[in-house]
Length: 276
DNA sequence: GGAGTTGTTTAGGA
DNA sequence: TTCCTAAACAACTC
Image 1 (tube, chains in turn yellow, purple, cyan):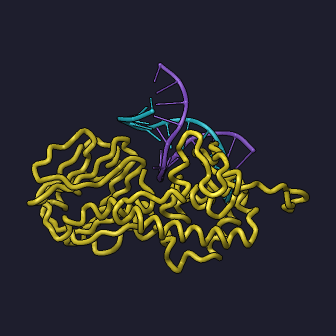
Image 2: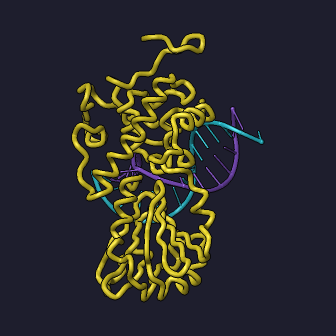
């Protein structure tokens, strides 16, 4: 479930715990979410530590605790963060619980695709510093987008938008929403976008990130019906702009929804797109 | 019971 | 080498 804005929403669920000391760290020790991690070391270090800040980058979350502790959380497909009261009895999928005097911070994930990372030290861990720049940062330029599309020119644009190395935070529904707004067919090879389409795509990437963070990231409000989101899974769903029937097919290994009314595949002749 | 799920990694083919 | 695709991971819902 969680993409950019949902991840930011979940990060903030632990806000009340910032400034508080962790009294106890409870875990399901054999959970897959701890793969590659020294669990005992993490429990030892976090016990007695004080959480002081949190941030996100794409779908990654980082919680920092004094002194010099870095806790990374990725929600995978079904993970979530929430608060429970102090004496919360761990449920089946509550893999990590940070217990404080007034509450418990819970990370639960039924499918175990999520992941916990941990580092102790003065300097940023590699797994955090190597993350690509935020899509709303100045570093994500139209030029950076154009270059990336050229490097992945054979892949359908839908598959390319899911690549976290360049588009951190974009997931399946955001990719479809962006392409729908930009009027670009999801199967169009990334290298075939015109300069104008590339420019529009850049603009819509920023816009969808911005709006989703405002609407979902703050209070998990419903997106307006003017978005594709509210129609994409409906049986017989209709494009809110063209009122034509939406189509669903697998592209890049993921179920993709688009509106044939406004997302058309150009016909290529001699390597050039011609008007249909 | 079977198919499908808003994520990521990896193996293997092109 | 580089790029791309499909499968695997695991549990739940329809």
